[in-house]
Length: 126
Image: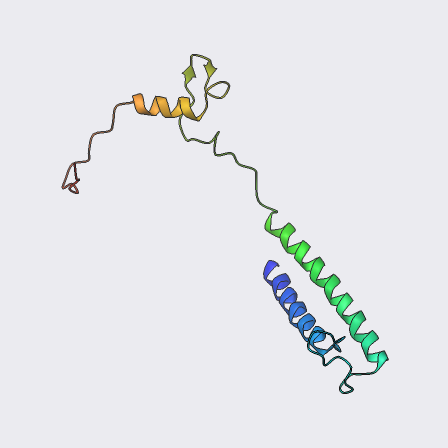
């Protein structure tokens, strides 16, 4: 479903670019605003303005829908509470109540290091 909405969104973007480029310049910047030519009638300008407004509303709606769909399955997580260490008793109480990341790291440092696996080892610089 998200792929379909992205494709519709891209088609709206391309249509909006085309409609904006078709509109008559109001002049000023390049000095070419008041020349007569293609799409110079007032009725066409109203159609292009309304089309631009409709495409802008659709662009906004699809952008909002895509952002809602992107965050739909996200669940809030905390890197502070999810350290991966087992819950142990600390002097201040259980690890979930008064511990924290620093206490968990301190406990991991106090554990003896695991024995190296048997077999060839990668040389390490000292």
